[in-house]
Length: 305
Image (cartoon, one colour):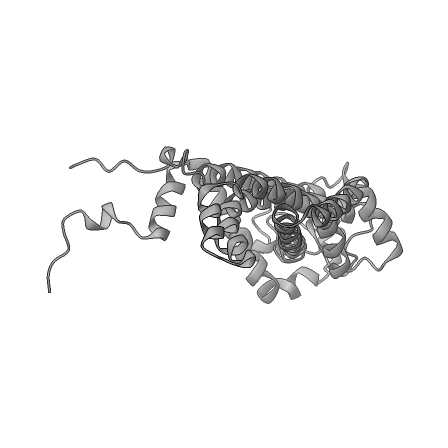
């Protein structure tokens, strides 16, 4: 078997290795990626192993102070008003918080992108109707619309995802339409049309891959906004209701104890801040990594030894 040429592994890295190397170049984005990975692990595994611990009441540990190393490790962040460990509850609550945000972003991304592709590449009549729909949705403040709808409907996880997704559709619709209107005039699209390619093939095979990096970057940033919106609705009492928990609901439940037990609202609020900050840092990194013009800033130099 012939040996690989010297330097083959470094000059031709696998895509995953290349992405990891580019991420390592931006230390803030690398730390953000690690934190988001930990949050996702807690989202998947947390409720499986810690749901019983997070819901078990212990009135002797009501509003237990944090950093009491003599207590069980689940009480290192303190206890809530019913003596339930805050660390376990934050880990379990991450599932509902991330699930609502990811569901709303994925739904709005798919629907908005599809409508944007149709509006940007088809007839003017379809484009006009779709854009008027976007204008109608954008005429209502997103949080106000969510408050009105959730006040009328049951504040369940599904309804919360639907409401938040509807309010974010215009973001992806208008962005994808603007991108398509510019890309459809490029030479490779004209060549595909001359060669007899169908409309579906041109849109989904040639135009969508060019638009996707921009939309993915926006979705990463929008994820943080939707998570904050869900936390705000839970804080107002019209989001997910007990016994289900989210980070925003935990902040709301700790509000009456801010002067005596500040940690009840501080730790879930800190989880929201760190997750939002990490998503913003990753969004900035992705904007550079997915742009062929700016990607060289993140590529590791291949100097000779």
